[in-house]
Image (cartoon, rainbow, N blue to C red):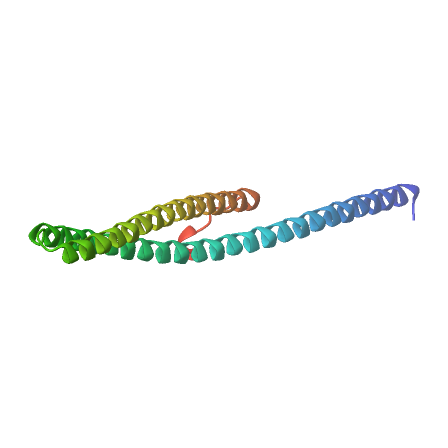
Length: 159
């Protein structure tokens, strides 16, 4: 074997070593990207679960709010009925006293229900805001995942 052949073999060996190092670096990068994708997918699933839970809570609170609204309407109607009853029984002091007591009770119940309605409405608004925040976080996570993978995701497959 000639010195030129030895030199060429040495060059080829160096090239092989360089390619092996490059391959190892690329392999390491692929592993890191795979781990990052897995973490992003887990985060997306977590955000989705949290969003679903919040949507259920929002629906429950909305149902409660509607029930309170119906109850308020019923109480308003009863209050009107008691007022009419009061006006028609002015001559009877016992009836008037009873009606006033009932009216006071209804007003107190109505006020309590109004306060509860305000509380439920505020809770609903907070939940809707949290839901919107989670939706935004989900979109951001999806965008980050797309950006890190360099691919366009089919967002409908995760909904």
